[in-house]
Length: 194
Image 1 (cartoon, one colour):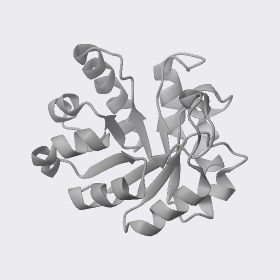
Image 2: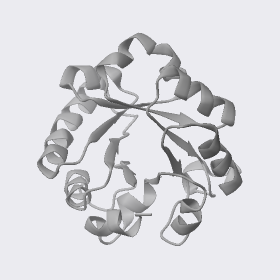
Image 3: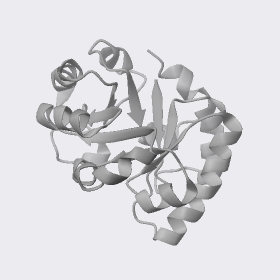
Image 4: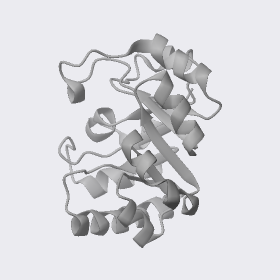
């Protein structure tokens, strides 16, 4: 399974055009990251991206922005551990709740708090986390073995190492740089399937 994460600053072309192409390939979800937008800008973008996702039968996952998710009635949200802890009372309205985890303890806590899937990372060296050592495949394997919910890997995931990731017990991968820069975004989901 594949979740594509947006980052318009990495995008080689128009972000909405790229999202539409990615959505045609039917990934498991498209996560709208874009952390630096104002609330109004994020909501406006989420509104349009949600239309693209619905047209293609692909879930839109709102990253951190609970106000936008609630306002637009988008049932999928992804949180940092800090926000997962903070928004416990609001979780009941979401059908899919993700959490980014960086340790076995966080993975177990996120599952207890109601996360329905985890994103563990970063697994390989990546420009997005320059100078921060990757946690590696053994870490990913341990996270997968510590919880009963699906675990997606993130960080430096490419077509060249996705087979290694699959051997850890992960349910899928999250990609950002590859999703925003590849030559054929329609084919992404098929290239990253386990």
